[in-house]
Length: 245
Image (cartoon, rainbow, N blue to C red):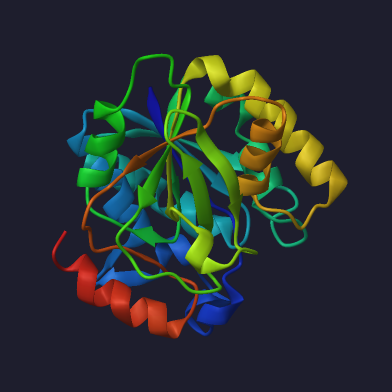
């Protein structure tokens, strides 16, 4: 199993930082970035390899590749997303379809979170679970969050932002454990998703899998401080959190 980070998006709501950097390389604690924190988490749970899907301002990630490898002891493979500024992240994850065959811990490149999330997902492996989503069942939800309805013993029934928060079991935080056995079916679902609409999210690919009868499991992460950084308010919160990790 290796790490996988989606870091191809433009992050326009974080300008001027993202005029020259992808979101994953915007500093959140001194010179430390979300990508640094994620690779640190991967290293702490024993991963020695990771792939990063890059696109927007990818040259900034290429420039830091050797430094990141030396700092975290993780061999990095960079995967170019040729449509990063045109299409949404269902296509971005599909670009890593060969990597999925090795089994991955997937982390969005804009999610500040502690290593306890990776540890929780790894502890939940087994019993036929092929895809496990990290789920925050504590946080109060609003319209923007990626909400999940899950059923006991049946996994995800619905995953979308377009849901009444009161109906949701919790929020998907942007971290997933994907076993090798799920790779081909997930890649096919992602392809169907972005071919239907290139603006769709990879979570819509998860919904496609569910619609096909595939069980996508969830694992609650407990009371954890984390944030998805989409805008300047999120960045301020991320900077408050990141210094703890």
